[in-house]
Length: 109
Picture 1 (cartoon, rainbow, N blue to C red):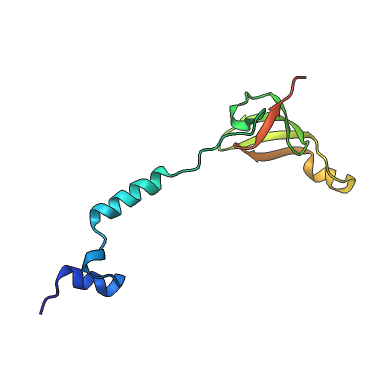
Picture 2: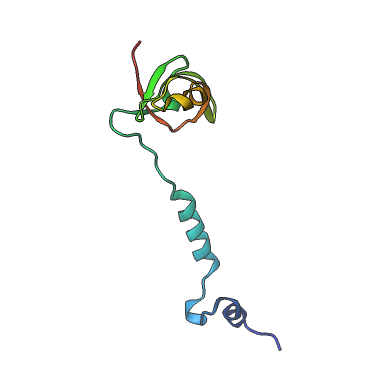
């Protein structure tokens, strides 16, 4: 004996025939989920690292100062100053990779 479609779905979803999800509803939910992305905006007075030109000096909110070398998905920078203890300076200074959405202030040299 062949079951009706809603009976087969009810077995897996635990819903009765009035609560079944249709393909149209599924497609609508998928489209909404794909549109619902976070919209990144930098804080007031800051810009994203990806918007700066190569060779620009910048400063982060934590006080790290550096120079932008190249931009891709991640940005290569040279860190010239970092607010860390003396023992850790050797690790933080020099060439580093920062995300392109790092909030920075453009510094005039």
